[in-house]
Amino acid sequence: MRNAEAQHKFDHVVAVLFENRSFDNLLGRLYEPGEVSAFDGVVGKALSNPIPKWAQHGAEREFVPYGVAADMDVPNPDCRDDFAHVNRQLFGASSQRQDWRTTAASFNLPAGPRAAPTMEGFVADYILAVREAIGREPTYQEYAQIMSGYAPDQVPVISTIARGFATFDHWFCDVPSETFTNRSFCHAGAASGFVVDAPFVNFPLHNHAETIFERLDAAGLTWRVYVDRRMRCSVTGLIHASRLAEQFATNFSTLDDFFEDAEDGRLPAYSFIEPCLMHADNDYHPALSGASPNTSIDAASSVLGGEELLARIYTAVRTSSGEDRSNFANTLLLVGFDAHGGTYDHVVPPRVDPPVASAPAGQMGFRFDRAGLRIPAVAVSAYIEPRTVVTTQYRNTSIIRTLRARWPLGPPLTARDASAPDIAPVLTRSTPRAPEDWPDVTPQPLRGLQRARSSLDQRLTAMGQALLGLVIALDTHYTGNIPDLDPETATVTEATDYLNERSPRFWPGLYAHAA
Figure 1 (spheres, one colour):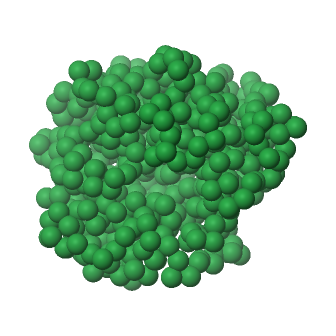
Figure 2 (tube, rainbow, N blue to C red; figure 1 turned 135 degrees about the vertical axis):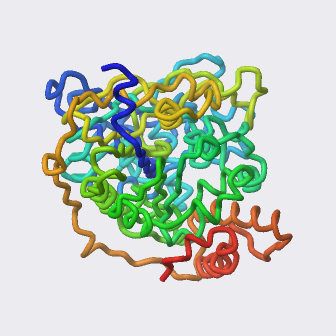
Figure 3 (cartoon, helix red, strand yellow; figure 1 turned 180 degrees about the vertical axis):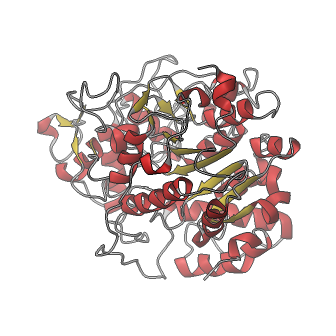
């Protein structure tokens, strides 16, 4: 199909980015060998990771084979996904050092600058992450969790949608690191040289990369970021504050607004959805160190919570039927993840173009010439055939490329989105599928889960600390208010009180439906 023809099969794009799952972990068992023409999953492959000789338990087994997740809270505790940890996962570095701040300048990189990843360091790195979380050496059963993923019947919503439309089995995040840098690449094709989430002042104050949101504004096109109202802030707004602060009051609102806008046919040209990252109970995020006595405990399974939210988003698009407005036939839904989060994947990430070839090396000496790991990605459209598998290499910057290809938004933001492929050619049908022909989705029930939380006097999760740090940095910059609050020691109550007091001046729309 000609690209121009495919691009005009949608007038609205809805994208949602969930958190911290690799392709193997969530969709690796989507198809059996030979079930579709091509699918690079885990079934029928003898995948494993070696156990380091310094492991105090289970080293005699020599390796951990890849298996099926034992429950809906795997891996628990959470794994690690900052730059040095991802390098250890990719290259299998032997260092036992846990914290990149005490690691040599190589940051767990191999000696050769062009060395190929072995994908054999996941077990070693997870042993260190579990050791830190639980304060003792993990057993084989505890660290073997990292070498497991979900079967389709465990995650029926994303599996059903993936089978019903298009699955991308070579979609990669843009940076081999954590949340903020990868989310910045999704909408800017760069992150101003920042590789890790800290220091917290970096992204809100010094990330000056131009965003696709500004291009949409310049072209007179509408956009909106819809945020789970419990967040009280927007990650997208925080990491692009230097570019988007003037739009905080007008273009950021709640998920309640998204569902109303979808029902009424009032979706903007581009909608971006943020699950709740603060509490991580609907973003698919692995358990946030629930075994640690000093870390707040999230809902028993954010996988089930993510499934429930995805079902609602999918249903909202499927049932939207406004004529001459946004509806099921003219809306493209993209389901993705910001990063792999430390969970295992067997495919070697590709080399990629740096955003700006002439730019100096960024934070931690990284030149942004390697992509991150494979992540789950699914496209939903009335013009996509069921059981489509896309084997072409895609990245999260394909979101930018798709928007630029659909509308006159100017040249590429960076070399990264210039080389990312457009999603429109996947829309191969000549006529739209009626919504009654779309598959039904039914999430596993949330009731009956143990949804207890830690005391409100306990500390925030790692992501909660990072988000609070961004808000404090932004608030201090604009108001001069310097709270007596340290993100690393703040309690849940202290953080909530601070956000309720300070955030409304930045994001009034996030409080419109607040309970």
